[in-house]
Length: 297
Image (cartoon, rainbow, N blue to C red; front, side, top):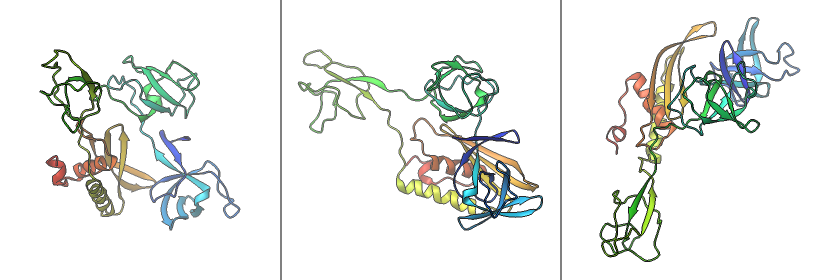
């Protein structure tokens, strides 16, 4: 991942076709545009098909082939404060090495000890252990300490389908069979007085159907396409948290945030980015949620 700092904000460089309103960084100067400068950052004001775009410069509009630029996508940067809720094993990318001496910019690092300070301990492929400031990092994969944990449960018998039952006689040689729903209380066989098997129970979570996910995508698309000119909505993702931000174009490359809404996937639901986007944007504009989401169907 390549990272660019522009006007105090951090962006990752992505090779794709840009959209109106996005920032692009010039990476190649073609013979047809010798006035361009490699490294120059411009904002897209209009796109033409999937190949060309217009950017606003002081001396007028310029057309750019898709090979000449990378899109700058905003990065979420951690705040300069302790984050005791984040568990070991979480991964981050270094966006600024101004306070560092071992982890370079763009390096991927893993949290190994969260000592509840502003600079806990991390590791990388090069360094087995070193501290790093939170505000120099952008999250890649966050693990929360309050996430539901697996629990061990005793069982002592199975029915014909292989599911554990409370009063069955233990089956010789049967142990650690995979299952999802069992009696949660440790117990023993009423015949022999011994526990004959156990397993780890994975907490059951609500999983959304393909139809529900498609409906969520359709809702987000409908809301986005009905926005009036000069208004856009951006989404930010941090672990299971989705933030929806409304921006209004004030002119002169100035997009001003006016409103925002933040939602977090509950521990009882399987995380899905499309569902999170739908919930956040509906909360932002006050649109009712689908009935299957409100009722938990």
